[in-house]
Image (cartoon, rainbow, N blue to C red; front, top):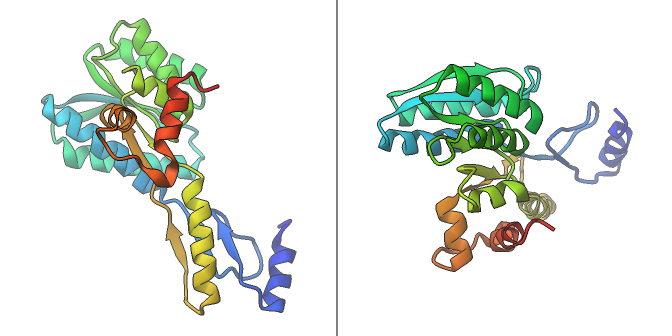
Length: 237
């Protein structure tokens, strides 16, 4: 509501407008640049499903975040669908609401691990939650046995991946949004119609992280992945 008047004024002046993630309540935007949150979950579920399928399947726990967060719920819908498609013998043994930060993630993960001693993996709603899961799995002396996934691609999460703790995350970086905004602006100025553009995030696991660092795999230049990994390796200072 606070910015609607600006958009209405831009409309009146014939100025093209682009919104990121959420558009204004009034006025007309020419393009939306956003993230397909279900796709984010699909990437994680596909990765975990394939990894567990190679191990013969097994039980998975999920910390699904705040119940009212539609974006997180979309992430977990995509995750569950992809997990089932890629690992027919996998089952979601625990789907726990909550898990909003590392402390609640730690507590919830402890409960899931206690109730399911044969658990093969736990998925966190975001990387902060995943750091809590890592702590719980480490306390249970099961690091390396239980796969752990997160979302967002924080520096701490990448450091954890390099230390063989966190198994996978999906990096949601700012650079692609900036690049896409400029590209979209030029398209609009050229008279092209652009409605919705979904920016594709970057999935990171141990193989990719180590490969980019040692040069055996190509850097993902659009998100400065090697630079991010070097920062993570140096302690995220």
